[in-house]
Length: 105
Image 1 (cartoon, rainbow, N blue to C red):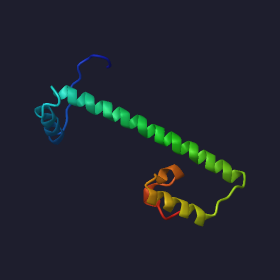
Image 2 (image 1 turned 90 degrees about the vertical axis):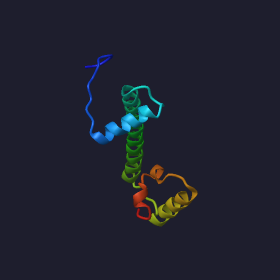
Image 3 (image 1 turned 60 degrees about the horizontal axis):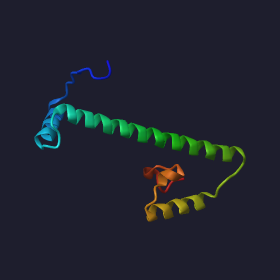
Image 4 (image 1 turned 30 degrees about the vertical axis):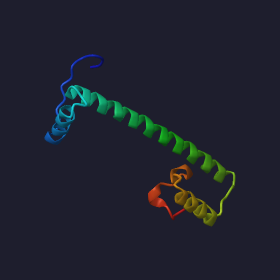
């Protein structure tokens, strides 16, 4: 079903209380508005996550291709660069390294 049709949605009591609280706060006029906003945010999150994954896969492909060409990097230099970026507040994700793996290359 799509477009303009009424849908019934059942949520657990905790989520129901959350939705009711949002409506009672005055920010939303109805539970439907709360759900629409939540779905818009979920869609935005999904798009951002898809873009992150695409960027990661592109970077991974680039780095694997450089390894295939025989290009190498000095592990100590990579670690030092990542530590500098970490200290400066830059995202380690740009180097294809998740924050929980800092310190390991």
